[in-house]
Image 1 (cartoon, one colour):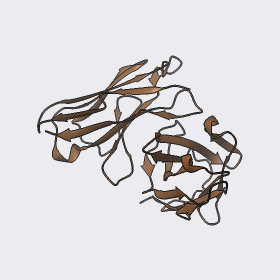
Image 2 (cartoon, rainbow over the protein chains, first blue to last red):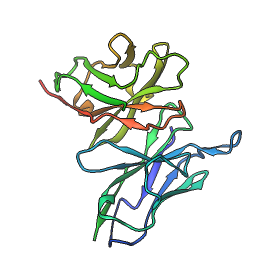
Image 3 (cartoon, rainbow over the protein chains, first blue to last red):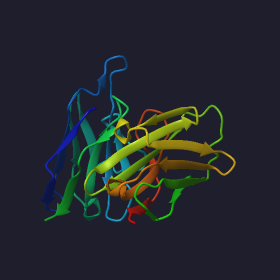
Image 4 (cartoon, chains in turn orange, red):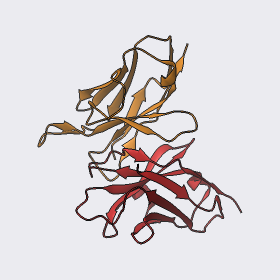
Length: 114
Length: 122
C-alpha cells in the first residue's frame, strides 16, 4: 500500500498570500509508460463532500479557479494557491491512484485565514 | 446534471451488515461502452478518507484489502443505483460514507454525493 503524507497538518495565512501544501508518497506514482503522475488533489469545505481540484498531478479540473495549481513528480507533489481567498478555507487532501488497490489519501491539511 | 445521493439506515448494530445505496440521477449507469467507475469512500476522524472499493460493472469490482472480504458492491441498472454491503460491522466502521464517480476509469473521483452518516451501536 502506498502511504501518502501531507505537510503541514495545518496552516493559517493572510488573504492574498500564497499557500503551499506538500504531499509525499511512499512509492513513486509516476508511470513511465505514459509519463503520467497518478496524483489528485481535493478540497473539502466544512459540512461538504470533497471536491476534485487537480488530477494527473497538474491538470486543473474544469471550473477550478486558476489560482490553484499542482506540481511535482514521482514521490513529491505540491498544491499551490497563488493568492488566498476567503472561500479557500478548507481541508485539502492528496490521493494516489497508481498502485491500487487500494487507492489511498493523505491525512489532510487544514487551511485557515489568519 | 449528474447527482449522487446516498441513503442508508443511519444506525447499525455490531456484527450486523451495513447496506447503503447510492442513487444516480441525470445519467443512466447502464450506459454501454462507458469508462465510468463508481466508488465508495468513507471518512472518520480516526482514519480520515478511506477508499472502500470501486466497480465498473458487477463483474469488475475492486475492494480495499484492509476490509478483509467483508465488502460487496453491485449495480442495479433498473433502479440506477449502486449498492454497498459491509458485513460484521464494528465501531471502527462508523463513518460518513460517500459514493463517487470515477469518470475516466483512472482512479480519481470527479463527482461525490453528500454522504450519509453511519453509527454503529447496539
